[in-house]
Length: 465
Image (cartoon, helix red, strand yellow):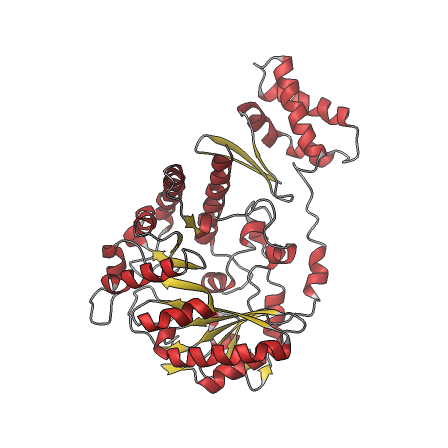
């Protein structure tokens, strides 16, 4: 399978199964889409001259105005890529999945819901202002320590373990965060483990005295801000209706500088109210932030902030606009990293990660404040996905088995999608929300993901010039 597209003056050909990316001239670009069916039917062990002869026939049909020399040069380039298994390569991963289904999984990451409460009233919050459609609660120190014990016990021989402090707003329970981290450090040498702690915060309670601890202990920090002041204050107000922008920006700027503009990112959400979201990304860049993620809202269409299908062309164009703007900043020696445009074409995730995604429900679990276990933070509060708790362990193994089989080959919509090995089939929680099936897809999200990948590859091409 190949995906051919044009973006910002580049003719780009992506060979899906090998991951090879080619920037080609107009002639080669016109011929490649027409030869896929031909090569599918041909024996892959034929002599090169036979491929060249057959491809040349098609080249004559596609570009009859070309000289023979021009055609032969184009055909030689195409056949060379095919012979090197960089074009129209076969999918060799599907057979791998049978062994992958039957693997013994270990837990490597936990999302600790340290606080089911929040001091903001964000309009798009999937967590019901931190309550997760349940009750307000803080995780106790005892429960947090049990969670780390559970992780150590269920992590097998894996050394590196991840723990994210999430909410609601984790800083509302900061003393417990510190106690859990201290306990985790005490377990490392004894159990031959290494904890990587992360924290997601809206910044309202962030204080000077917290910086030293956060910078010492948190491998990554996610700072929630939506971009321009008017956008942020409209969507992320206090319950009184007052905005939170002026309060948090100076704190976030200082924390980013103290972390040397590394190991953090500012994370925003764009909605129907700011479909010109490239301006929000650039506004964050102008504030001095170099690690930025601004992501599309996901929600029921009944809300006034969610996108409709007719909005998608505007959003796709906006990603193109953003990609060009970020390239311009690089030319001006003011580069920033935009999370969704960061793509590794030379290595990237391992095969298992490409096929199965984040590992929710198997390698990655969420822990509610009272110790209940769920497949991920977005499933917390959905009782049909309650796996067990820290005292019983996982008692709903059939749910884990469902998630174990959640991958690109279990989703029929992924079979002919060029993006499948980059998005790994998308988010199971979003799929369930919109199709009632974790092996379904959230189609608007798929369209936006495909565009982001196209832009990311284009930017790689531009930077390689």
